[in-house]
Image (tube, rainbow, N blue to C red; front, side, top):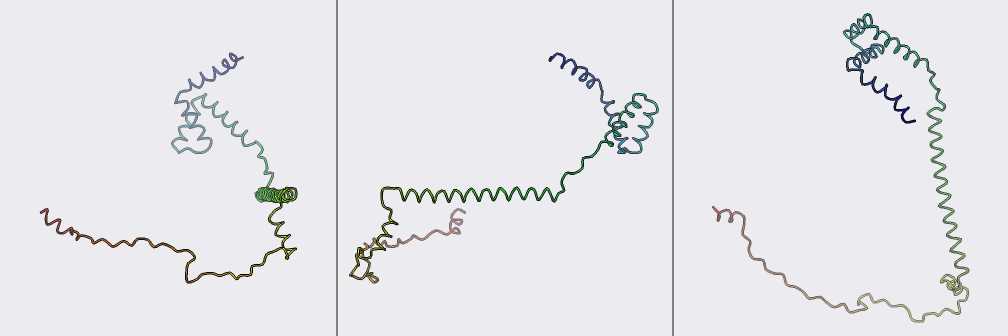
Length: 184
């Protein structure tokens, strides 16, 4: 099977190799002539070739038929306008944003539910439960009889003082002008 494929591919490759640069230049010139993209001198050259060269005449007729066939192809109409496409894009973005909000909100609600259940079914009492029980029974709370005193002028703890260092005396520095004079 690969031999048939290679056999059909082989003549095409040979034909492409046989087309020399002059033929390629003539093809490009003829194509530009049909598209109206040539100078006056090139137009004159193509017209002379068309009158004298039968190969160029065949190529010209084939290119004209190809161009006419391409022009006759139906152009598909746009299915949606730009405004409709933009609205569709923004609606998808909004749906994703809403979905993300629902997911995060649902996760938060699930976390609250799990934490509430773990507080109810755990064997120990939570500090919140103790606080609620103490606020219901105020007789169980101990009342401090001494007022709270804060030392403003004197610290509660003695803070040791650090060693005081004396500033060192610096030796006179040599100015750059005297250094220059010494080297001269």
